[in-house]
Length: 243
Image (tube, rainbow, N blue to C red):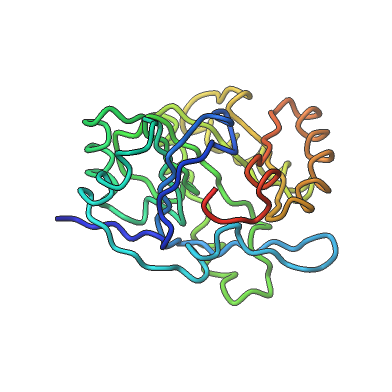
């Protein structure tokens, strides 16, 4: 039986806090392990790791079989599953796992950095490609992160095979300009991407950071014709796990 590697509190019932499905009741399944090491510089000179360092920088390990996971989530009054991480596409077993969830009538959304691609039966792909500012140059992970973070072929493949959205983490206006260039690179491999599928999300791991940055990101979204992506779970629960 194939197994998947999860974080310790790997399943929880909440609402989707980001993107086009915001507010939708959801069963979250958090896989552990990531091929990237995000670390942003804040305006005050401090740095912030990704909002789930326990699945990336310090990955936890909890091995579960597909049957065990299905049994654990059966009691939730919901058929919308979000598989997140870490980076789900590091684990090949997500393909048969998604197939099993689909057989049981679940709608499956994958949250991915979209640097790795292979086919699955997922209903919806939430892509968050990481931009050049997603790892500070003084980090010991800088070179490996920059080498792995961008895969145009993978990004294009996701847009061809699935319903999708792009969520860009925005820290400065330069991030927005880079995101626009990245979309153009993807379009060169596929076709035009509707602007309502492109969302700008403030770089924030705490409620305070989110409140400080949201107004500016909203203004940039309006300027460029993209959508603003709130981070409702941070706004409500701050940096609490499992929500």
